Image (cartoon, rainbow, N blue to C red; front, side, top):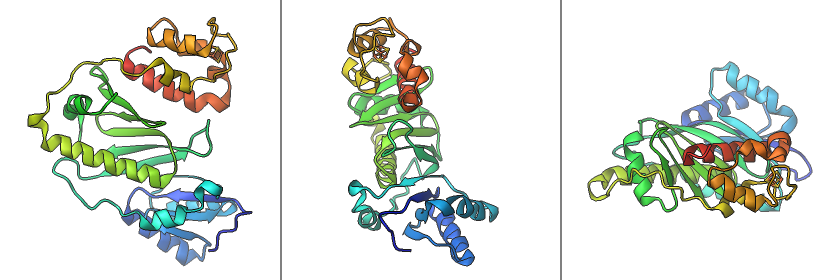
Length: 269
Ligand code: SF4
């Protein structure tokens, strides 16, 4: 299938290569129009998305999710990057696999995606070690969770899952998951040389929190500015729910979810 910049497309993502290959066989057998991205994803015309997903699921093949492929300038090299991407082959001593189970667009920023993936091993015991080596991470030993930012992306590590918000696209997501897997396995291997950090220090700054707020300085929360609200939130003197635009406007629902996860992880929820 040739991609026409004037049409709308959807990317369907699969949890692993086996499911991806099976799904593509289903689409071929059905004579569906699709473009192969890799064994892990395909592009289909937007209007065929529902039928394609139904056909794949009908054959008991798993789908992680889908999101719009808008083919804007920033995605010009998408297919080249996808071809160059190689699925990590290293099995690792500790973590063998991370399975991508949920993919969807970020509601507040349609150019980005969010995802949930599951580990094949409980990583709880490694979180304090990861807390010691990931710069700017915040550990909540009660949950337990480890939260950190990678540029504008927010990453939450739980005992058996990882959530990522604001990934650029599916290639970015795969690369981050590979990096996390490699980091977890390296940390496990070097555990004896790392001093675990059990402190749940608040390392997120008010400016980082400000980045997730609507930045309209509307004063609904009782503060003069969004930055003042961010500072008070960090100090535990404000609540996310007091920011009316964040709570009521759907375009901020993704940011609200991220803020809630961050606040929970920081223990200021
Ligand atoms: S209510 Fe929200 S958007 Fe308005 S000033 Fe407060 S933090 Fe900023």
